[in-house]
Image 1 (cartoon, rainbow, N blue to C red):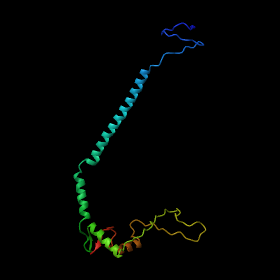
Image 2 (spheres, rainbow, N blue to C red):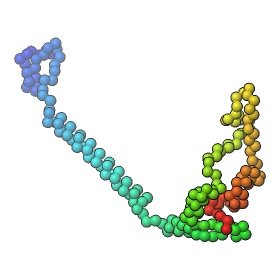
Image 3 (cartoon, rainbow, N blue to C red):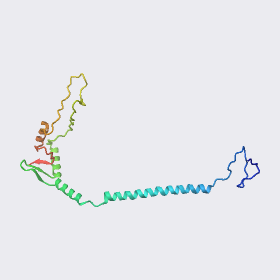
Image 4 (cartoon, one colour):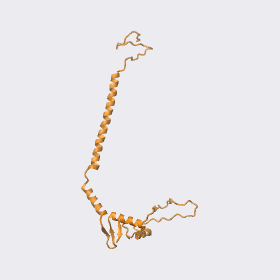
Length: 187
């Protein structure tokens, strides 16, 4: 079915036929394409604004729950108890004369001792000794063939007495107990 140059198609257009292939020679629908493009941009903008509004709503809700909600009575009681512990005098060991003093007073005393050069506390960093597992080479071990011996690390057994250095430190600090109370002083 070949068409001649002068024949019209069913749409009423004259088409030139070359080599038996028919091409659509109609104009594109610019109004339809422009309206689809505008609708896509508006739809994308509405989606972005909707997601942003949803995020803002969730953010405000979380802020209210975490920051603006009134503090519970349990938390208020805990803070009062902590303030009382930090800002009051009390006996830790009446027989040995160890008392707890308010933290502000302890800081003042420590500052005065440091200014007078009477600090008995360690002021230099001390390296931490890490226990070595049985059969493992120590990390600071000398290379093979050297005459230096590796320091022996004897792990403490559970329930054993404190090492002599720890006892000396506790005696030097003056509290004589292993309670670890840093606010205790002798009177």
